Length: 147
Image: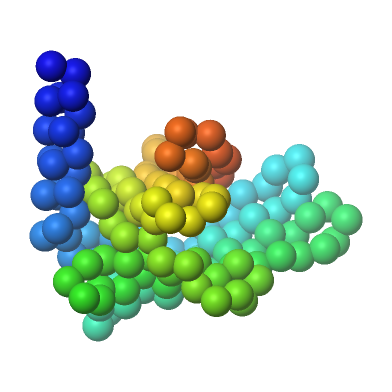
């Protein structure tokens, strides 16, 4: 019975993502920022247009050193794909496997870490989590940046 329930849940998530459109991720768009003990983190996302969203993450550590990641989400080959390029490296693809309201789950089961990237909105903040398939990981929440 437990195996049947797990199979039903997986089929439900796959069915949700199969018909997904990048336009369903418009809630991610904006300029977001967070202050933490170790420094400042920023995440920026463009509105979806032409099957593409562009993103950027920049983290500035307290000692002044910065790191960055180029991001994009695109519709390609009938799927919505998240591409991460930490430090400008060759992009690693993660396929959208589920959406529900203001929550999106991307996976790449062959990648070492992370294998799953999750974005969601929480009380107006944009949150993200990177994790292994076992659920071990790290998460961030950013507040909408006001100009």
